[in-house]
Image 1 (cartoon, rainbow, N blue to C red):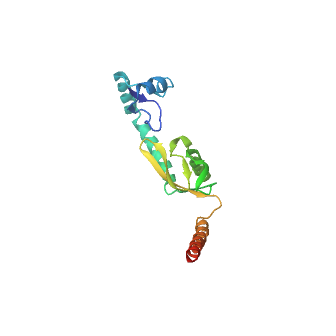
Image 2 (cartoon, rainbow, N blue to C red; image 1 turned 60 degrees about the horizontal axis):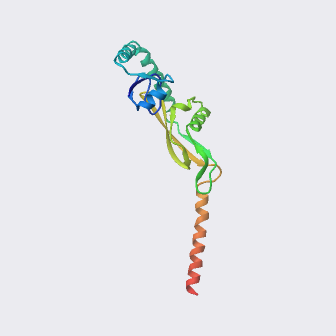
Image 3 (tube, rainbow, N blue to C red; image 1 turned 180 degrees about the horizontal axis):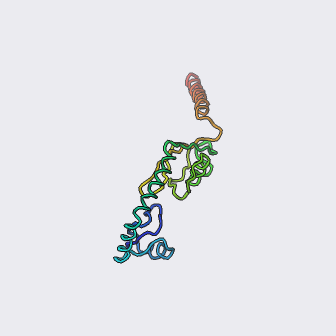
Length: 174
């Protein structure tokens, strides 16, 4: 089913895009909620005329989105979370968490325009902020443990391995 989107839907398309969706998704969700209309020939003509008349406004929206994107260039987030011994997080870091961290840095971003998969381990990841159809910014996200420095556990494990090796040597000598 071919439809015209009336608003941005992350993962599907942006406002005024003509997209193909499965019949049930279009008929049972998108059209009844007002997020889309059927892309009939007359609707396509109306869309083309509206886009032609709104070209100036669309250029201004894109310029504004690029200005917001410039504020995010060079920004890297470091999120501190509670971590189990195995390196797994208690809970997860998601788009809402990234939006909160950006707000702490003075950059207001709606959590709905941030896409990333939920993070459940310590490490380096990437979040994508969609300001406009053609303007997206990738923000590096580093998740670190709350109180444990990374080097300390490695030093503790090394002597344990040595004592096991010494114990094995003693049993072989006897």
